Image (cartoon, rainbow, N blue to C red; front, side):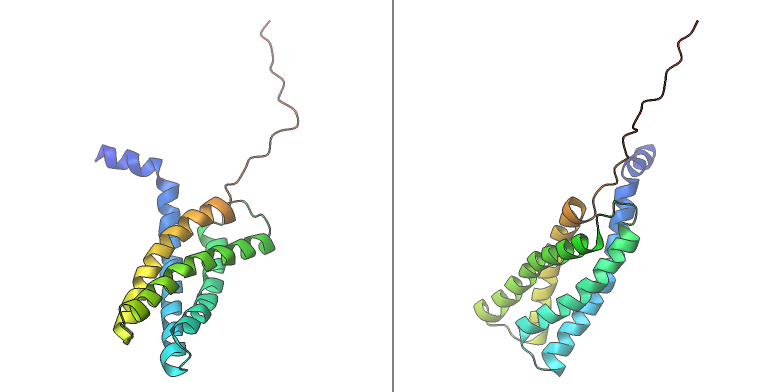
Length: 158
């Protein structure tokens, strides 16, 4: 039990970030899935277009949740820079979804709702791993302590 406690203390900030990231991601996933199915089956837009539009909507939510909750303790390097990188990296992660959907639809010839949603789940899983790593690396940077202009004077004993 002591080992687990020490391990938790050592990785507490990572556990907190992962928990918050997972919560924001779960909500974004529900938004993404709902929008994908609305665009695909109610509006009849096509699998790829539906996925791209659903991703734009859910990514906007995810950026806000991650910036102002998950990674709020990290350096803020400018809304425009962060938002651009966030969407760029989500575009890369979107490739996981598009490739798994395309593989299911055109290679395996599975275009029923269950198969397409299973393919999306695989893509979302792969994309989530990439997103967490890339957000920490390039979007929400570690806070840096400013270097003091002058070092404090050390008093010499007499």
